[in-house]
Amino acid sequence: MTLIKFSIFTALLVFFTLSTHPVHASDSATPALGLSPDPGFPAWLTEDVDNYIPLTSNQTSGLDWIASGIDPSGYSRHWFIICDDAFEGGIHLISVLDVPGRPEIHFHRAGKIDFLPGYIDNVTTFQPPGWDAAFGQLFTENQGIEGCALSEDRLFLGLESPFDFATRIGNEKSTVLGIWSIDPTDPTNMENCAPLKIIDTSDWEPVLGCKIETISGLDAVDSYHLVGIDRDNQLLFAVEFDENYNLMSGRIFFLDCPGPMPSESDNCTPLDHLPILMKPTLESVAVVPIYAPDSDFICEYQVYLACDPWAPGWVLNEPDWNCDSYEQKLFDLLPAIYRYTVPADVLFP
Image (cartoon, rainbow, N blue to C red; front, side, top):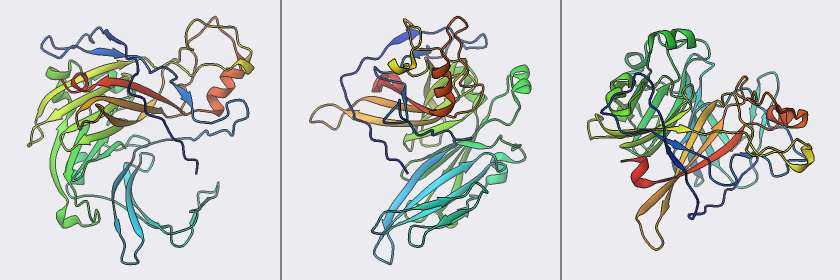
């Protein structure tokens, strides 16, 4: 497992440009904005671009940390939830027992996983109460839960889409968000896990100005502020709920998502811009609060996005630019990571 550390800098540029609403946008909606990546982003997920180890994977779906505590054995235990959209919408709980020594997980091509004793000690299918009422028969192959976020006591699950692309575009379909209360000390305790609200995201259209067609990534800033990714519309959405999970406010951000900068060793014809990708498949989001100096006041958020290395997401939209080595890196080195810095009162107006 590779641990990638990111330095946090507060003095960063952010570029906002007013964006044109989709044709079905509401005049009463909060104006949409455009976001460009911070300087230095996007970046390959490797420390050595020229002598890299390919990191290509087939799918990257939702993953989030739930809670940590002390196991009766005296070791720290950590709970995670992971989404498997290829398994008809399945989600799983992962229990990690943090024992001394370097943890190892052995994966086989054949699909078998060996968990060394004393580290990952349990993986269970997780199906909270009200699951069928929330998602019913909406799952199809490779169309399941991809948005997964947890606050201190809330679980948010977002459906990638209940419709295929052609049906979704033709009928302007939306998708579904489910919200549950959860026991942060024991997420397996179903007595303290209860459905709070099932939301058809088309209900947000008067506020956001468009329909959220896919939820491919979620992050909870807290129990009432949620950020997500609509992959097919290449936008970020930020929503604020009241205590009953009615939408109080929201905003969408259309994302500028170029490819990472070519390195000198690629010997590419120079460009005056970062390479333009046809349609990056953004499917992971994490939001980091940035505090004012010597204060508990959040002045801005840094939003990290990662892409699912799925074709045609990494096709270049540069018909007059040819660089074989760079195109090979798109398949070998992706996913890449993006970062956008947004003032706090702009993300949640």
